[in-house]
Length: 524
Image (cartoon, rainbow, N blue to C red; front, side, top):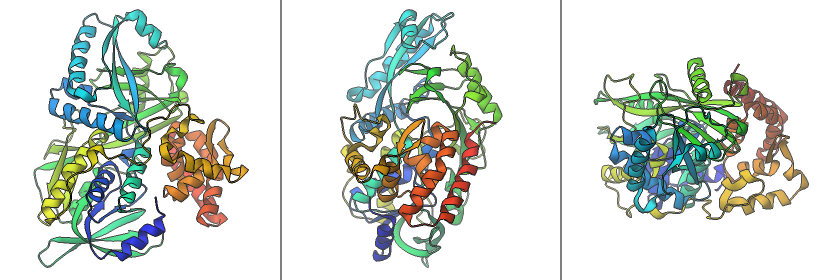
């Protein structure tokens, strides 16, 4: 990716964009890739870092949604399963074909879930990841040695996708940039511009680093800000239109790999309160989640509630022989789902649609709300189709179904260190930086294999601007081990200060800011 300065230079040289996108999460970045690949002049503004919000806080699954099938939402499941298969092809370096096992403690559950997963498998068609199987209790015990065996009857195994959400977001930003889009983080849209007919024709964007303000003209403005979509709608003078954005909070606890002791994941299809719970291996740790709690005040750093933490710990303890406690949690992170509900329905989030909705305001503002990571590409296609209609734009048809995402390579086996698989085709460029100086191979923390070279690469080629950008989203240390991330922060700040030509005071302030944020990922 070009530097941030290069993108700002492009911003000032283009008199009018075809598409202006507000929001740099899954929806916005997907839209930028789609629009730019059709030949549309595209700019994207993200007020913080790419995927800072919900899009870096998912359960790390690319899936059709087994529970949506149980709810009878076949259309959503079929749509998601197709997109799952496409992502496996288009971003192979980030996609893991993961085996899941549903443990059954009643005799009939094996047959029930086997039938459901055969339907799930059938709906995936030619893009299936593999067959589901009914397993005897002996085989389940062998595959999941940490699972409680008492009263175990059987198990059902099936395949679904797993990925690194923040890294995919970054690769989408890089892909859009390679297709000619202007992509800028830490650019906050502070106002909307209208013509004499009150139709939108641009935005006011504020560079949070330089404090410079830009008036940017565009034919179509897209609001892809997720749980914050209401802010842009209100900025545009939104009136009642029959729907409500209802943020729902989901939390995840991260534990040492020994709690699962397997490369297979566990799916609990129905917990004590009807939720689905996953226990998933990820980056040599275990992610356990999620919850579904109404949250009516969205923010970038939502906090896990004690009740949510206790629910996840207790449910995990109901199935694992090694019982996790609060002191075992390496990191806790919460994300907000931008669910769409009819006006007045604000509480029953488990029943609210996980599908997406595209709204066109009287001013011409095109907003997308709802949806999930798995279907980001299809959502973007529909969104840009609508933008073309709204702005009477002329361009190519959608190109993304078979578009290779930046970094895409098939063979990611035997990479050392193992976590570097996420770099895909960028791995050689990273290794080149590492070979330039012996200090570039320096380890950031004794318990992890992240190196100085990865910080330098993040600044030079991935638009990392803060210590948080590196430790939360360029590598995932904050999400994997918050205490280790805090300990690594001073060194990361020092290396970044040199790369960004900042002084010691900047490094000190960055460290302080990050440590305060990272404390929110620790359980007291």
